[in-house]
Length: 259
Image 1 (cartoon, rainbow, N blue to C red):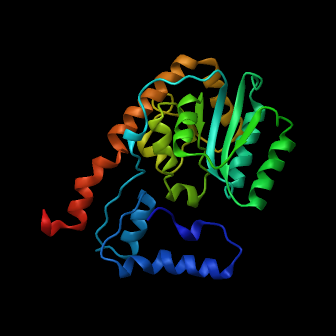
Image 2 (image 1 turned 135 degrees about the vertical axis):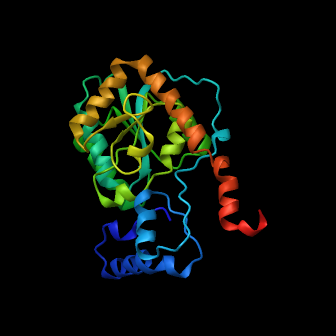
């Protein structure tokens, strides 16, 4: 399980009720549960204390990320996500507005969504007053996406101070780390368990536009340190989030009688 559904905002009474039923009772009709975060694991244990659980964090196939160096003449920060996370996208755009060297560092937004969602994102870019510095990209191949990751000055993934974000652990983080570029995030949820600020990530203590812009400025002013942080993040990811690490654990968890 990768998300606490009751924490996802919804105006639909049907969806709210359905989410409640899933989060409260679905664990009771399965033999075992694989949660992605401590909060989800604790929820399972709260209602079903005897239910076997195996916590598995974000996973990524690190063999798909070439280790050869790649270079781009254009310097940019990159955010990748769904258009449904409009609040987060708008946060990133506003943080970018605050940095001083926008002429030298662009913002790439790799976003996918329906027409209405994409139009809302486009409007946010226009309202920022920096549309010439912000590139909106969609429907990229995985290979194209990896290249963009590896060429970025930093990869952006702010988590909000909400139960929804504290309970989830975006798989995008595993991909970002595999690209060997520094991630800029916030100190909520699973981030606290795996990352240290300026060591293997750049971490804001609050979900705050000015703090986030400050971390982006850090990358601009300290490119060599940013490279080191990116490499340390890669080491963490390879040793902690590469999918093969969990193969035997998962096999033993699901088929203990065959071990």
